[in-house]
Amino acid sequence: MRAMSQPVGLPVLAESDLVRQVARRLTDAIVQGRLAPGAKVAEAAVARELGISRAPVREAARLLESQGLLRASPRRGFFVRELSAQDVDELYDLRLCVERHAAVEAARRLTPAIRDGLRRQLALMRDLARHDDPALIVEADYEFHRLICAASGNGRLLRLFDGLASELRIVIGLIGRLYDDPEEIARTHEPVLEAIEAGHPERIVAHVDYHLGVARREVGRLVRSLTPAS
Amino acid sequence: MRAMSQPVGLPVLAESDLVRQVARRLTDAIVQGRLAPGAKVAEAAVARELGISRAPVREAARLLESQGLLRASPRRGFFVRELSAQDVDELYDLRLCVERHAAVEAARRLTPAIRDGLRRQLALMRDLARHDDPALIVEADYEFHRLICAASGNGRLLRLFDGLASELRIVIGLIGRLYDDPEEIARTHEPVLEAIEAGHPERIVAHVDYHLGVARREVGRLVRSLTPAS
DNA sequence: CAAGCTGAAAGTGTCGACAATCGACGCCTA
DNA sequence: TAGGCGTCGATTGTCGACACTTTCAGCTTG
Image 1: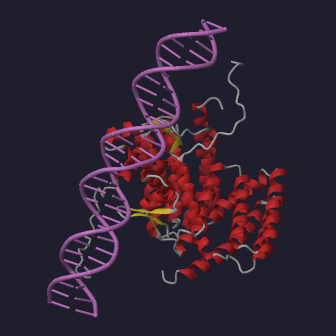
Image 2 (image 1 turned 60 degrees about the horizontal axis):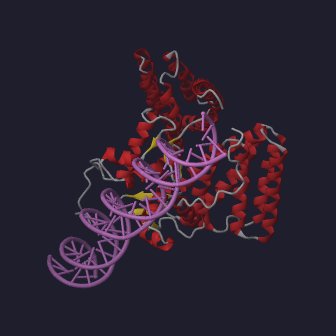
Image 3 (image 1 turned 180 degrees about the vertical axis):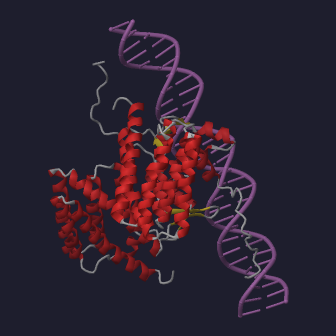
């Protein structure tokens, strides 16, 4: 029993699992905006491009369907999900609900390591604001919120947040520049971290509400400007 | 423009969609406890039993994997997800977070129709309590909570709730009888509905918290009794 | 008797193929 | 000329097949 071939701790490399790889590629293409909302995801084309058959592509598409990134239209194929203004509203409603909880829990379990991680991320955002690369800033913004969710200690909550964020990035990738003033991003995050460090639940909720409220208005406005009617 | 072929009101018939049908069957089998946690879901066996090939079964399994009902172990197949006590804790944490929000929103948008629906469901639960059919009671319980989420007006929140409930029912189906006193179920729901009708956010949250806290303790206790160690 | 080895059986991962269906184009009709 | 109809190419849904991996029972060995 002791002589079994020991794992050496190397990351299992490329462990087949073609389906997961395809799912990741498709996800990347969507959140990076290379696959626009409403675009058709032709199985054969994807399969050809990746040099594989259609079966794994279909399975990956099912995974993404369940996550809300794709919409399956029987006999017609898979399409990148289109988000209406109402969809964005719903997503931000859920983010509010989830991130409030995450932030309060994060404050309860705050360790020095986690606190430092959040501070570093905030500093990173301040740095990035000066270089003004919209994609990187959105990424850093997302990561800050993700850290808070991770700090909640609830793995499912984190996965839920990832799902909501992915869906939102369907449209955010489209918008490009999310804020006019990049430095404002860092500024609006600061009170949230301060509140978490201070640890008063009401203040935490209030600041998360305010911060997400601002983001929601921005994104909502931009989405509405992209889809005039309906 | 006026002469376009009018819909005749015929119901769209059967719309095959094998994958979706398989997914539903598997889901039912899991939440009804016919497929126990940890059980292997052999593609070939399922396909044979349903008289179809393995491809649609695999796609359905991917859907359920994304929903947390199945776990994919590469080269080994799909297994019904096993829930630890911590998993149950996480799930109730999310339910709390989601249902608080749903209840408050439901109160804000309460219409007579919705209010009556909730009252009817509560009455149904009182009826069922007298007949003492555990499965039906769990079903009615679930439906009451679902109505509240539906009343929130947020479709994604409803889907999220469905997902959480499905996962929880992996273990609840196992437990069989959830409460010693079936009538207690109806009783603990009453204050929640009253609070929603009264419409004070704090009272709503307080009652939802209390009600879910009770359920969580019950389920947690039972799960812990089923999985002695770790 | 326990542990390890060996081979076969079973099951998964992926592929290519085929029938059914959808969308588009052009034709016919009023 | 506008609108409906039939045909054709392209794509999806499903299937059976094949290679490879895992599993397990039985045998061997210390």
